[in-house]
Amino acid sequence: MSQQRSHRVAVVGGGVVGLSVAWRAASSGSRVRLVDPAVGSGASWVAGGMLAPIAEAWPGEEELLTLGADSLARWPAFAEDLAADSGRPSGLRRDGTLVVGVDSADRAELTRLEEHLSSVGRTVTRHPGRELRRLEPALGPAVRAGLEVPGDLAVDNRVTLAALRDACRARGVEFVAESARAVSPGTVELNEGSLTCDVAVIACGAHSGSLHPKLDGRLRPVKGEILRLRHRGSALPPPRRTIRGPVHGRQVYLVPRDDGIVVGATQYEVGFDTDVTAGGVRDLLADAEQLVPGLSEYAVDEVTAGLRPGTDDNLPIVETLEPGVVATTGHHRNGYLLAPLTAETAVELLQDGGRT
Image (cartoon, rainbow, N blue to C red):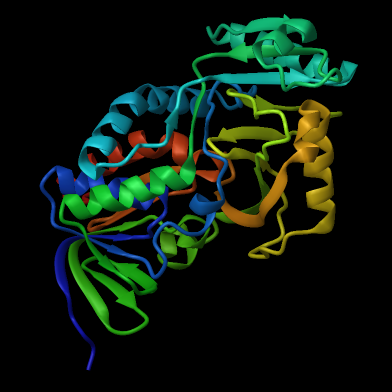
């Protein structure tokens, strides 16, 4: 016999977005269950944790820049509330970002970014290589120019996930360690039985498309490989700021951690393949060492890949699909950045009962 479980809100997916929605929904007074067999795994576990709407801005993505900037402005209060509810550090890092270039083509790309940002009212500071090395001594001589973006921040993704889990528990969220097969108004179909609710929230990242007909074809997995490098006593300390490429036209980022640095991220459209390739690791290491040569002395702690949920316009899907079903997915590389704004919007949709 099918097992029935009743609750007002069921959040399907336990990555950074699902956890944020569940926490904020419970904080607003909803009774919440979060459905996920492995909370805090997937792309959220692999992520670099950049909160970088300015550094990642590009012509044609002005709406995404506005969303990102709006959500970034919410991050300090979001982090403060998260630390208070969880009793843990939030993981927020406030040191800013440097976007640097190596060859003439890279420097030309920096100029295009600077001009685009100026055209949309955003100001960054350009520095020559010598000044960049004064700001971050770990940068190597190959770095010839760069942009300082002090407002772009970062998080230690795994610290943030741990805080979100504990904040959810503190607010009474119940965790259901099962996989969902489908979502319809009032029901989440599980591998074993079902869960009934007033409103279901789909927050399964790249896997969300299979859970509801109105998401079918709107999402695709985008593989990203990352390296986690641990600082050793004999090596130079990592930079304090996030460092981004391009390096000979290839994008790379280096995001500091207390014990080292995260290097990412390749992008491949290869379906749900999560194998790490030798070529991907080679390119990441080569590009990262161009920017910070001392990384060659670091220990390799982890090599892994995650699947970002991509959409055709790179904008997230945060909407009511039908009465009783809300989607919060499709954040691509911006799950951490957009989590505060997505959670806030989702709570508004939930308070309306998920009505269209």
